[in-house]
Length: 454
Image (cartoon, rainbow, N blue to C red; front, side, top):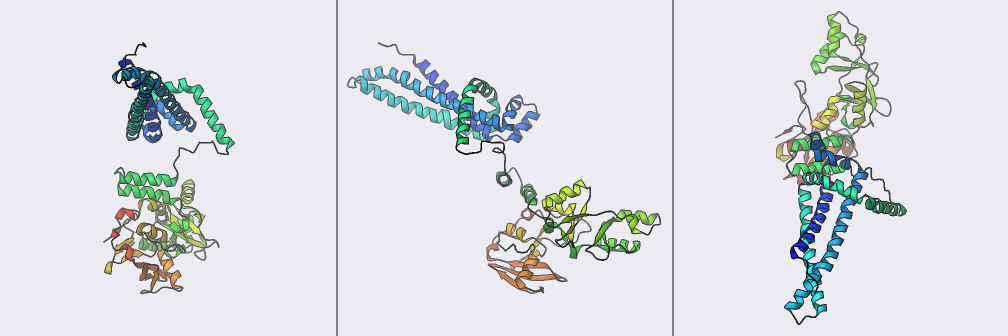
């Protein structure tokens, strides 16, 4: 009669194999789910295991080898567990089953033992070797990944020949099928993915509404052009370069502007600008010719992206740029403050007297500034106004087909726009009504961090 292996030895062997499987499952899920930035922070703080793990996470090829080692480890431990259970545990159970039920023949007892072993080992493998380590790894990815860094380094060294063979074979097959095997960007996040991460972080309480909105605005800035951010030429404060020093000072004090563009002949020919502090210095030393303190001005095309305008101003160490249109005329003016406000919202100081971006007027209508971008209105109010024109005021006049007057009204789909105020020929304020907005509340932070007056 075959001597039965001690039950304790059999159980220990099975648990060790399941433990190995659990280790590789946890290592794979934890490393893939870990945030590289957090591991970098842990490494900077002196965490030895994080320093061991970080090079793998920073190199896409090393990460692929790491995952391959996990997959090979899972496969080998599962195969060995199945073979061991079949050949040792099932064989050990056959004789007791035959003794308990003499009616069973050797073949029937062996078949029953095989089924019992299959059910038992499969259950233990799925629960202890797959589901449990996966759940722990996903819930605590950085902690698990760093704690398993040493055993995984050992596994990488032991399994390196198999990793080279299987990984190389897989890459060769992919190339034969015409797939790109360059994974240099496979583990990076696109802008859209980053926006999703920001939203998820806000929903989980890691970011407040203002922080979320600032990050969203930063992503959005890359899509805006100078024309969409600039101060239009009709709102610019510019002077002829022939103006007297006293006349310029009076105008600067009246408008609260510290930088005044100067033009020759017409505003379409901006030749430079003066800073008010230079003008005061000129006055103190008895000078009268503004050309002595005139500074060169940066010119940028209206189609230039806002981020490129930022880079241009930073490179040339300038605060302000003149935006020109396709015909070479002055379209407007853009400053670093305008670009910063696209991220942080309106920056009001003692010289600013702009109205609130939006407030609720009579009959529950939302009253909005006419210079708001239509794309912003659509995004923050959930509307679908056409984007043929940049601003809300421009959209109203486009729909009217003529200069607007106070009281003019246009209806676009379910949205009604009523002209409330004019600034010469420009629409300065619009009342907006839409049945879809009856129960919609817009928080302060949801409108680019700008004022929302009740």
